[in-house]
Image (cartoon, rainbow, N blue to C red; front, side):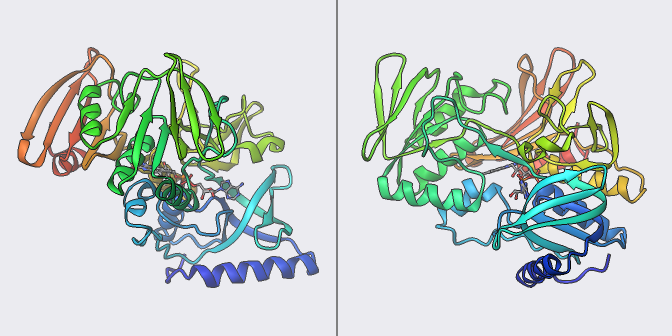
Length: 412
Ligand SMILES: Cc1cc2nc3c(=O)[nH]c(=O)nc-3n(C[C@H](O)[C@H](O)[C@H](O)COP(=O)(O)OP(=O)(O)OC[C@H]3O[C@@H](n4cnc5c(N)ncnc54)[C@H](O)[C@@H]3O)c2cc1C
């Protein structure tokens, strides 16, 4: 694939024109590779294919007209800087992008159907290989009424900022990475924040229960009101306030309410395609889709949308920028017949109350934490977490160099 500067607007215009032209000529276009979703996994996949001089015609179908951009800053710098940092991804590849909502895959005919966003026109293309990289979509708790905000896209981030600034107070449900980052950023721009979670501490899943009191103290020092072990009984709306009623009888009010309870794979559009197993898009270690009827060797998936099956039969997913990029890269290696590079250690980072928290490897709840390095001036600590079965994970607080060395395998 020849590299050249990726000109998004031009490509979109060309693609839309092409779609219109097709509607009148009715000629089915064929691509060697069609990718649905234009984010981390898709970018890593197509970049790697480009480096391997993949020569086939590639079409990327993406429904968000503002893509491609980076998601991690949406809860961090993009929010605090009033949207003044550039988060566009410079996708330097010779691919065609169409802004459209993919609606159906026909595996027998090897065809993808989509509806263009601007014109609402249905179009169909044929493919040799198809990659599903449609990521994840926030979900809401059953007790959340319509109108509670959530964060996944650039539009969501802008809406949360505008609403928070207008109302001055925000309730956030869910103290995982996104909830905690939002709490941090909204405090930075002077908004009153209350953070709710049924867990006893923030980042419970990410840190496997470790450092809960420490992270709570950071948030409280920043002025975040922490409501952990919270029993949310009811959420209601008055003319200008959201009211959360708790099991202990209190009722707390906010001008803006954001749900950050998690995201689920974006697979509903695949319901009619016979690709799902128990509602999940299940893949093998290479990213090939496994259906209840068996493995499909021309439909693949990568990133947050993928569910894998463990040896014990449990389904598991990874939601992280690094995992999505790695899966996209591995898929490119597989598709182009190149040797597949080794799996990297799981890695995730988040920004909490002015600190960078990085997690490398797998953390177990029963792990013992040992301080490897500490620098109080920089509020930096590197912890080694050794589990009873010998598994080692790492938690870095403001320790990017220590974690980088570990990722490069230079430190035990
Ligand atoms: C606010 C926020 C902060 C984050 N911070 C961090 C962080 O600090 N560290 C970290 O490791 N990870 C972070 N993440 C997670 C990380 O961004 C995701 O793991 C990563 O974006 C997953 O990439 P992906 O390519 O699998 O899918 P996504 O980024 O979800 O992209 C999927 C794309 O598919 C498109 N799509 C979906 N359905 C269709 C369809 N039917 N037709 C056409 N297009 C479709 C969507 O519009 C979307 O653009 C954060 C995520 C968010 C939302």
